[in-house]
Length: 205
Ligand SMILES: [Zn+2]
Ligand SMILES: [Zn+2]
Image (cartoon, rainbow, N blue to C red; front, side, top):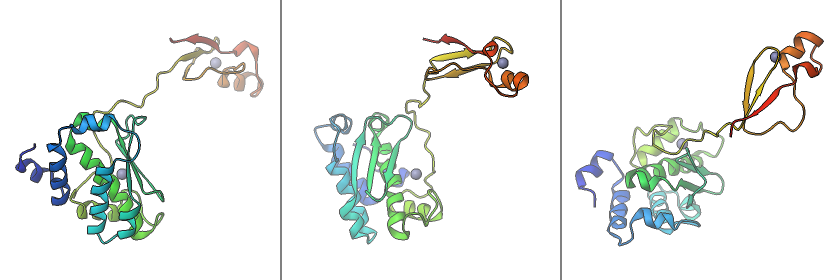
């Protein structure tokens, strides 16, 4: 269980802290519970519902759902409207419980903002969203995270080399048809395909 002082430091909403406290006393650790994933997380959904009620948003309280998404990589969480679904990255519990809750509240703030103002009437991380973050107990929340989540970078699999000018391009997918160097074709024949400038394919794997 985290010491009380730490909760204050993170500035969580008292209710959220209290609920998290209950969770951390469970025999099953949060990370373990999360790794069983899939489907709606009843406990986290209950936290969100309760916070929505406290914001006087009973409709949102009834509709909100929280789900773990094992396909997320660099994205910590996502809130989808009008489904009112919050998806959380399954790597978050490995970082800390604080980050689970913080991300949950960050995403909930998006839903609260949409519910209050209507989707499309507010910028994603604008003033209204910042207000919602304050209301939910995470004032000063930033739009982006700096969490050590897996990189989204996809490895380039193919390299193509122009035999004439030597310029290179890298691709994840292989070209399906013959491709020539754009610049060289432009320079010599006004943009028409020229076999002389056909790119040489090199596999990087
Ligand atoms: Zn956001
Ligand atoms: Zn070229």
